[in-house]
Image (cartoon, rainbow, N blue to C red; front, top):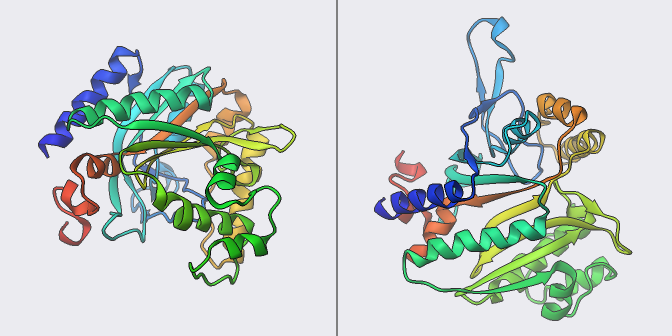
Length: 311
């Protein structure tokens, strides 16, 4: 708990020195997260119907609200707060955890990558660690690590490259096999004292990032790993309202196909995107994951006052 307090103080000083404003946004929202790999907790408001939609979601991220603040002109901002994800509990996951999320107007994902490294290095300095840093474009990493071109390889080749890693292929698509290769073949080989950055993901894994129209289009997205643990996920943010709605609706269509509940779209976000959002880059960093790395533990319970089972 003392180390957590030190880390929070460092974070606030880090952003104060860079004139990034700390904000606080709602934890309960009328909209949820459509991502197929994330499930929201659902709550019901019992008050007067004029108060708004009775069904609410505990936020899985502060992203949508912070983008609304950006559109309103608040400028660079960060939030350090609790987020919630249903069904995620275990040694490395807790349904309630802390996320640091921040945005810079006029930046792209490559510039933001460097600032994330600065912050993580400053945090590790609190415990006397000095990591090295390596950056890899997604495609070049796959070619060098497993000898597979993620752009041109067939699904059969991707499955074969998993070696003795076994997976039920029912319902899995190309991106699922790529994810399995990353998490089961490539990521486990990352050195413990190295910050590894992967950037320019396949366009099909764009999430909320812009797509750059290269010869082979790529999503302007990055992830940061410390050792084998993913700490942060960042984007050169999508600002096109029509494209954002299409991605939300595509997620819900895939949810229907997989028998998952559809999620209410964030119409407030879509409205401000239609009115205009300046180009920006943003990133989310898991505080518990960072603390676990700082303490050298693989049990999230070691960095919580009370884990879910005891809450």
